Length: 359
Image (cartoon, rainbow, N blue to C red; front, side, top):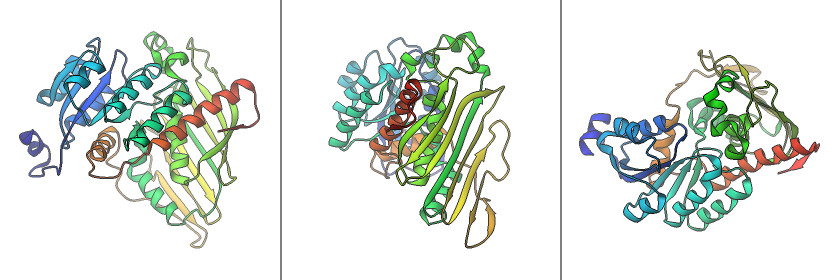
């Protein structure tokens, strides 16, 4: 792999490289992005693929080239013949927990496509196992490492917001996908297989960011969840959440499929010493996506720093480097469980009409 790394990064050579596995099945999500990310990650010195039906083998060969070392039919076969130090798992949520458990038993760190379970109770033992064995379990929540988010976190940790008073966020995607027969037949649209609809698949990103940026866990949820658009899917397309944070602050999150195309996203935190806002209209560049206000300065400041790198490639590389011991992971197993517990507590609250459900 020496020639590959030099071709990618000139004369740069990684301090350490590790073997990585991709464990998937028919319908596995984001695999094109994951294959490309591992191809472009110099700390990954080879990839083994576990794909029982062989649905993604040709794409893996095309994208990874010589970096694809072998392909297997089952996790057991893979683990008996290969020793990956990190496994990327992209499967139906209902099928994911037992596979993660086997990987952890083998001493392998895990990167999992969210939500990686259909109940938080199925994910909790995985976190216990990972923590007991000093292993990583991260979810595919790549928004954490975008430059705007990292700048926002730096400002908040520096005292910009002060004590959190309130929060407001939304992540809205296209309703169009729900009209396609291929989507209606997929595991994404069936809550028994996916764990949930928009909130478990996309809303999870902004829910995680609310806690990641504020530094406050969410301890109570209430609200409404359902199928507003009326498409023949078995998971919700709309969520209106009310949130209670650990310090007593309140917030809201709107999570739904409403547009014809693209995304609308926004997150705002207000506190005793100022406020900060991050927003993007994906599909068209948002001017000044990050801005903030400090009470002591009495002026709005707009971010003028870099917009890249962002997306799955830098997130995957960070996960590989963390598995190799080259840097700290950007997400702990407990943080992965935290956001899942909020999601499933909210679904329960919405179904039972509870005004407040503790997380």
